[in-house]
Structures are given as structure tokens and as C-alpha cells.
Amino acid sequence: MRLAPLAAIALAAAAPAATEERKLDMLAFFTGKSHAENVMKVALHGAKKLVVDSIGGPNKEGEFVLIDTVREEGKPVRTRTWVMRAGDRPGHYTGLLSDAIGPVDIVVSGDSATVRYVMKDGHLSVVQQMKLQADGKTLSNHVDVKRFGLKFARADGTIRKLD
Image (cartoon, rainbow, N blue to C red; front, side):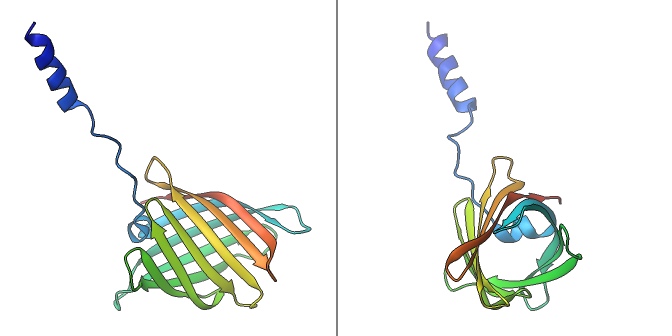
């Protein structure tokens, strides 16, 4: 009879701890290579495939640089560059994007991140929401683009860490 309680204690000790909340480390996730596949829908147009291959890492100034190769169906391939640095509070990053005017703002909370910026034309505001998936190597990706406060486009897909 004494064996049963000891066995139960041994099994409980060997069982995995309660599931810890996943935390998104943006810099670790985007260091190295990543690949995004999205479907973009623009108002009054059909759905288009949007693929982004990225490579990222710190520069000598201590900023994080991410270079994207963007393949948007029906358009020429283009490159865009993000340069980000830690903000004034934990989980906050700020910086520049070659496609944007003004600053890019990123807030990371738990397993999610929200990115906000205004495109160079000054009329398109972008809100991108990413959420770390259970495998730790995939982000769900949702982007809303508004023009004059009205939804103009959206993209949905995934971003996978390749390294």
C-alpha cells in the first residue's frame, strides 16, 4: 500500500510543469532567415499572393536591421529595410521602415506583437498583428491597411522562422 502513494508522487514529479505562457522575442525570431506567405485583398480587387523572404540581425550601431524581399503578385520584386531599436519601456521598439514615413512603433505583449506605421504616400495607415504559434517557429500574421480611416486592404498568412 505504501508503494502507491510513492508512485503517485514520482509520476507527479516526472510530469511536465503547467504550460508556461509563450513569449514572443521579436529580435530572436527575426534574427536569421524567415519566410512569410500571405494572401492580400485590396478593395475592389481580387486576392493576391504576397510572399516575403527576410534576413535580420544587429548592425554595428546596436540597431536591429531586417531586410525584406517582397514578391507581390502582379508587381515587380522589391526590397524594403526595417531599422529598429529598443524603445523606452520593456516590449517596445521603435524605428524606421523604408516604405514608411515617420516612425514605426512595435509593442510586444506575451506571445503577440502589434506594428503600426504610415506608408510613404501618407494616406495608408498600417496595423500588423502577429501571434506566436505553439511550435515556437511560426507567427500568424494579420495586416489591416486603412485609407482615410476606411479599410482599404488586408493580408492574412504566416511567417516561419527558417534558422
